[in-house]
Length: 422
Image (cartoon, rainbow, N blue to C red; front, side, top):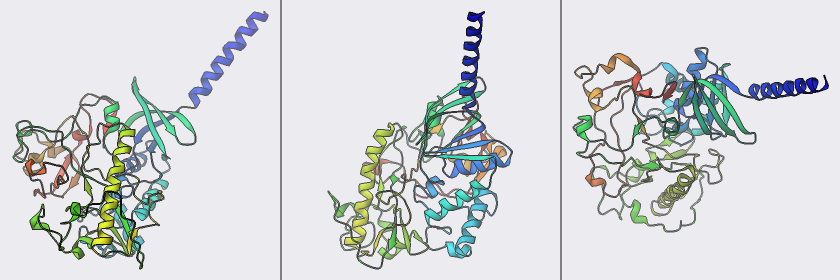
């Protein structure tokens, strides 16, 4: 009897311990990895549809490219008053005192301080009772078991946690989750023999677009010139605008005045977004297949390049009262959390949307326009001039296209269930 009681007690402890372990799992309907613009809006919409939703974000901010990367100038869709984009724009309008208050620079009709965008995204998320956000959280491992995803995540200060979900959304900047899940993808330019796009190269390559480490500058009203960065070479930026040292510009048709350059991304409250594509702080590096450690090291060079350009603006062009804003990013170097990625992995989805579908949607064999779930109206705009050998690449600067729709099948991987890549 004693042995039986001991055995029963042992079984009870095992069952109790297992039960406690399982209760520690976090179960959600939708798990979203990445708190960027697509991740936040996916989370809000899923929550509004009644799904229990969790967003994982590596930084302390929400909004991705629009906030964490500092590209707080929205391209296109100015005539689109509805949807989550409309809600965000209206909140910006309310904050700054009207839509005209957002037209501070000439590159966009919607410009704002990144910190304000982050604040608004947090407000929108907080209003949804079915939506949670774990910040400073990194996905370490994920696998598909039956009809659910089991994710191991590292939460700063709390350690490893397990999250189980029915559906997962990859909202990372480079499609990292898609790769972890075994989704097929392409990187770089495809051959025109595969895409039948007139502007595609003859042969495929792995050349991606330049990235940019954006700088948000603030007018301090006094000289705030930084020390000359190590290895600084003004010739790198000589033709960023019209000035005496500009002799052989890469883009002769776009040599504008320094006033045009600095007001390109002028933001409210005497701030300036420095995301200048004409011999400015664009930087070529293909980070996509690098490890997190390799990416971090490579991005230090991109940051340094941006600081060299800031010094060029201050020292060579006389903008010595403009310095990195001290009231935007809570980072040690006052630079954004992440760089501006213009290109990531392109998954092998149920369908592949290309330039021909955008230009002539009704004459294609695939009637993809019938399944569109999103719209856009901005031209093809590729940045490649910091790549050594860019002259050999197709000229994709503002290739015109009409307004277009994005087909649902582009977001759904061909061979992996329960995953959306946004």
